[in-house]
Image (cartoon, rainbow, N blue to C red; front, side, top):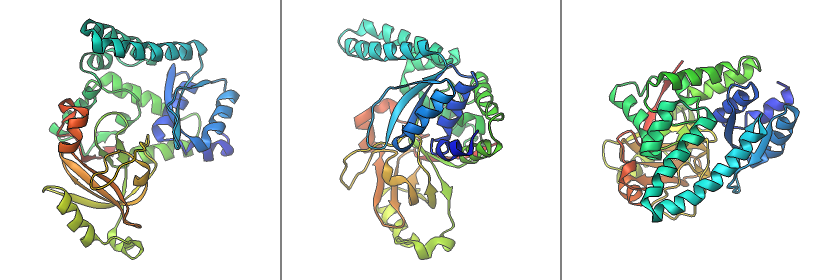
Length: 325
């Protein structure tokens, strides 16, 4: 890979880099990426030079857009048609319950198009998006939440279980496809995949973080440890865990106009940087920018679940998961 490409590609989230290279090496037939607007033009040129077809899927906001990439233009055409059909089906399914079976059928078609394991497609078709929490619940109940295989973060779909062999093999296959491009790129990606992850729920609803030493950084901070811990315990029930951390750009950003006392868009642009994070496992989180004291997140299950539904409730929420090679 050219050095000029390297400075741009690392601005993609590691998962998107993995999927882009998997498409380029014919390891994956089609992929959907979240692209920061500042590298959108570079990505179009990169795809053109490498005979990759690209189409914008949207929605586009002030931070990012969503695109699909593939070596096969017919895959992109099918993706566009399926997106339109899904919109039509979802509206009909609200009015005619029998149409829900067609929605399940669409999940099977989309899963096959992306080459996801059949066992994972089946779970998603039967239980919907909230099924994503199952694997995290299994990691937690088995005591493996602090030793998650690195392959677990390399794929794009919701796995049917935390030990799905086909899913972990797919993750390893994607990581192996990086080898022929750049050792530097592979090292960058693996270092990001090994960072601890704070998880809310669902697909991209997590942030990677690098824990920082308070003793080394306290002179640069506007918010002291004592002040933050007092604030956190006023907002969350015990047991509360707190840490100082550095947060890179998350997989996806959510922009929403919200006023305190609650700020529930997760992950949002205000989360990037040096942050104080507090969380009550399974219940909620409170996050403040340690350098300017700006509130970045205040979310609790009793406020969030009435909006999204009880089906999203899980003890796996609002916890830190750690990985291993």
